[in-house]
Length: 341
Image 1 (cartoon, one colour):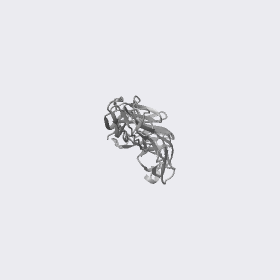
Image 2 (cartoon, helix red, strand yellow; image 1 turned 180 degrees about the vertical axis):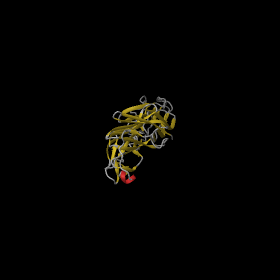
Image 3 (tube, one colour; image 1 turned 45 degrees about the horizontal axis):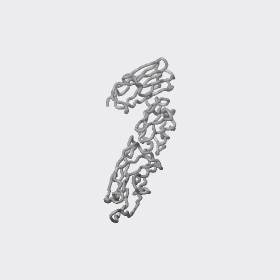
Image 4 (cartoon, helix red, strand yellow; image 1 turned 90 degrees about the vertical axis):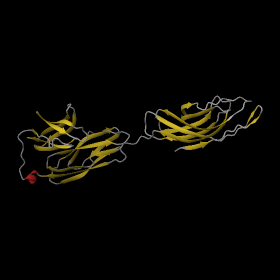
């Protein structure tokens, strides 16, 4: 809130050679603008002084800029001479706009004074005009967005896994702190909590669906954060089916490890990566770019024997060649993936 203050002065000065009416009319600081509103390395403050009537007897300092009695800066712009008694005092009418650029303003209450110069012959030195204004903290709070807004896993064999990727974005101006996630029965969220996400940044994790019975599953993944909209709800759904009821064949346990070529390939932006395990074992499935950098971990856990299907989402990756690598015990296999956007 900006409050305005006016000071109206009237003085009579006796000069040699006659009576001179040296009138100081009211001065008003009409506006204060701070730009830009967002925090930057520098801020600019602009204010206006209107209707300032003064005579040449005054040596006017344009303003002092204070925050809680601590002077930030001052400057001399109105450099009128100090007239001695017996000299004619010309009259000035001043409308002035002044801007100054400096480091970012801390939140707080500031004041601007248009004052008489300290070298003036007038005592005491008056303030012609003053204005107080408040600088608020314009830093917007943390904001959260999830991509996609919901996850639908479709049909998944009982005791098998399906994994979809989920990206959490910070769309605010302060760090986003994600402290907890709660997933409904049948689903598991895989993020390294707690998370701290910088403004305009994102973190991608995965959500696993593993049905234990042949039935529909649904619910919300609940994300707790410091965003004003917390908690965030991500709808999840999937259907557990028995392999025998789906294809009327008995479950075949493979006799060896396999990493199947992804399908489709090329893909944009998702593809399914399948692998088979001859017995229950821990599997680590990851994706590397052409420079050998690991860009995604799709699985790192124990799996039941049989075939497993995982979805790889490359929405946040550029077009190019990638490699899916499966490690399980001493078994290592790699398949080439081509992402075309």
